[in-house]
Image (cartoon, rainbow, N blue to C red; front, side):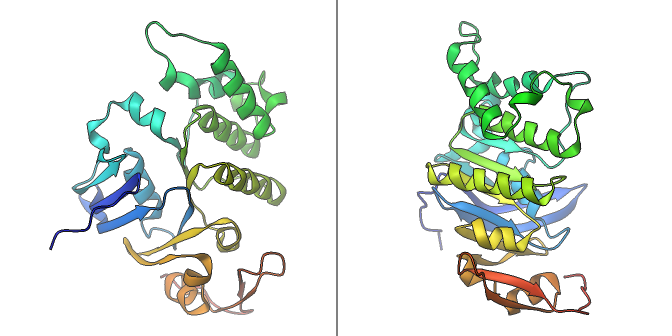
Length: 270
């Protein structure tokens, strides 16, 4: 029976993704709701980052397809994909000696054409991205001299400089202390409120519960649940996905779910 048509800008259809002939994501179909802050959660090696790589075209499927704006994402030129979605990969590397400002400016590359080089609009996009991530003062410093947290914020700024309305973020709070984690999550929430669709892989369940409007929970390369935080983040589901004994209480700030691990609980692989 054919699947119903979807109006979502980004979706996976019976997607299969593999590394070295080992299938990681199995026959997965999912829509990313337009205008959502979607967070993908799951235990290590469950396939969540692999799914994000597939959605962004970093990883070619061994079966199925990813559809972006009504067409197979594979049918677009690379620059066109970069004008439609911004991606922060998990392990980004920069050229030796490049400054933070120059790295952020590379986010404007998809907008450059043979007869259209650097413009005031490009400069404005870079300055707004630096300001939004608190990295303006780092612009003249070499990226390889920055702390891990500073580098991560500069990479986020580069993605923001692309000025797309679809953002894919793979563990964007890695290397950040708790204050900068919250600052970045607040920034992503603000970008979402301004109309951008945000898709992030997160390890922190309570960040996911507090900031996401839509959660996808994965296990063993498949989706086991998706929906609002209150629908997905339940004590039974956390036990199923993470093997973690826990209680879920009301977040005193938002009223949403808050996961509290039980003391002495042993985490087992899910």
